[in-house]
Image 1 (cartoon, rainbow, N blue to C red):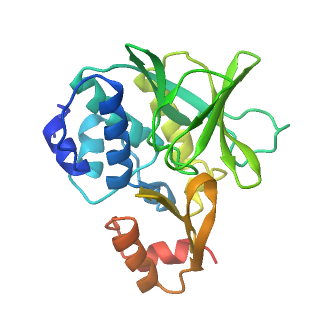
Image 2 (cartoon, rainbow, N blue to C red; image 1 turned 90 degrees about the vertical axis):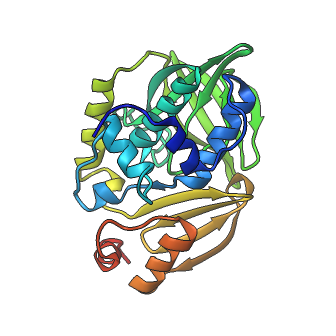
Length: 271
């Protein structure tokens, strides 16, 4: 397979038929379309299947197949699309804090995001944070609340690190911390290997999927399927009781075709 990026195929996959320019309007439109069309899913780490980050493999999985991916795959694909359009992009990496106690030590850099430099300043773009998918780019400005259709976010700075937090029903929750040091492909290869193989990483032991669609956020953690409104408000949830219910959710809610029989996935999804 060729590593050449196929912008036309990518745009068809996400259903974007509008104009293309290296501006904020295009960035917002592409980010939202990407998230609605290509869900976050980490089936391969759960199934102990390799996660390949070369351009051909990422396009074959996320563009040519009815599959999603996790942060490295998602943001590498998004970066390629933006660069093909003419955006100025810098790849960044962060340390995930979503499930970490506030006073716990920082972990390794296991998340990828993008800095996008536009005429009016720098923005943070991220289509791969599967605990709380970010539905719009954020200005790289600290100490201001930034509202999107699906949430409210805030960047703060401390000890040389930027921290991104999301407003939830019970208060602010830190997503990840990062700096503005550019990353290269080998940085992502190392983070990807660690994230997709380490038994202490949730993605290797739990079924996790998420997709944004209109005014709703759909999240599956093991067998619990939740529907959220803005700022994480849970409006519905149910437990999937059988492989057939999981198959229906994957097909209709997350738009994913599983790479193995769904019974295998259901059995790995815990109770």
